[in-house]
Length: 121
Image (cartoon, rainbow, N blue to C red; front, side):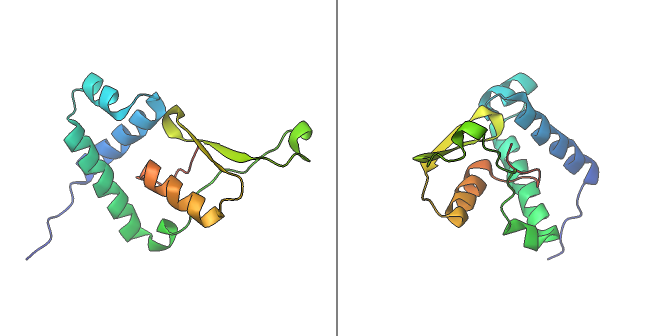
């Protein structure tokens, strides 16, 4: 069976749309409603583009993308009880401080879907 040829214009449209949704701070449901897009279509393209990115760069799929951590002077010597991460769309993730880095990466990857390689903001 022959592979269907990609529609690069449609893919570019959806890459831009996915980025706009992330930057909007809106839930996917609310963003889709405002844009007149079905959630089913949105999630299809989110998965399809993530898969295409993994196929294009398989090594990047295993590498969690994090931003550098900067501690304020007053907190440098304090031992945190938990780690708090701000995810895209304004969501927060609170984790035990002793959690393994690899597991944190897997959780962020699962939650964010990583439809692109922009990382976690």
